[in-house]
Amino acid sequence: MGKLRVVAVILLLLLTGCKRDERVLEKLGMVQTSSYDLLSGNKLKIVSSVPVIDPDSQVRRELLTAESESIKEARLQLSWQTDLTVVSGQLRDTLFGTTLAQAGIGDYIDTLLRDPSTALGVRVIVVEGDAGELLSKTFKPHSDTGRYINRMLEKESLSNSVPPTTLYEFSRDYNDDGIDAVAPIVKDAGDKVNIAGIALFQKDKYVLKIPVEDGIIFSLFYDDLQQGETTIRLGEQTNGKPAIVMLSSISSKRKIKVHQLGEQRFKVDISATVQGSVLEYTGEEKLNDSGTRYELEQQIEKHITAKAQAMIRQMQDKQVDSLGIGRYVRNSLSYREWTGMDWREVYPQIEVECHVKVTIKDYGKYS
Image 1 (tube, rainbow, N blue to C red):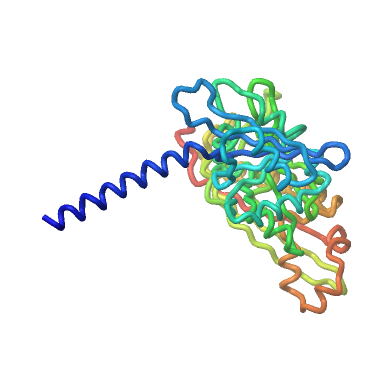
Image 2: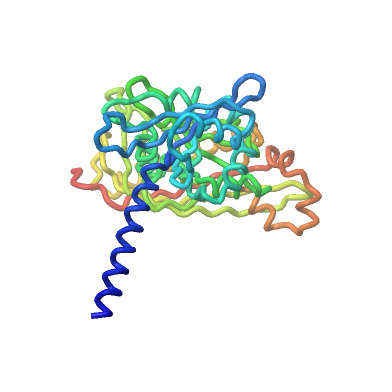
């Protein structure tokens, strides 16, 4: 009988504790998305989106806005605008407006990382224009713009059209002298949000954009791929229209080889071995013929190589090493040789050659 009383008391305490936790949760403003924009006078505008958990409310989120010179001070201002206790433990995405991204976001990334309640997996996203205006806007049928952007980038990063950059990854590359950080770009397209491309950073400053249609080309030379898809326009056919081929289930392996030609002179070979399935093909040739498939593979190789060479030339012109070529050069040198060299100045002068090998592993029922 005594044991039953003890069990009953324990159950009562547990239930009481659960009720107390429920009341605490109802008082928390759990920020899921925050935007950051640079104002005149080096002030920062922060907009935070807090989900409304009241099932009877017609509003699905609460927007809090503050203007300050620091993130920490802005958080105090945000807490003054709501009856909830504002916390960042559920933060998923950070949106940086173009002006701030171009000025440099390193200090803000560092501040976010110093907060022990902020997860390392929070996404870093660049917004074309004002990030706060984008986050504050509602895009029907989506009631929460922050969640809408989060789910869209989750989907696109799986197909490798944009990199899934997190606070950890951005900080890691920002602090590595052999690679520069990257981040996805989104924009307001009127009645929806669009993926706009990939932002390439020099240290912590956004300096170059890769258009979204070239995102998969960048990804092939950025890292190994497990899954991807792209549409390629090849040369004109006899009817005057371009042949279009859509590749899906793309996988690839990247290799980088460094050749030292002399003092601070290098040649770098970047190879991408690509496999993919033809999902759509509008050319006049029949893909059930092995010779035709080989010719198509060579056309695709030529297209990817030309795009990649032009892309890398742009990066060199802007002194942006987003592919991490510097890591491989650093590994080929002694510590003294590397530290005695200004990689940022040497990088634009190196010779980079792209090599692509494409294999069509499946072509469906084309006859």
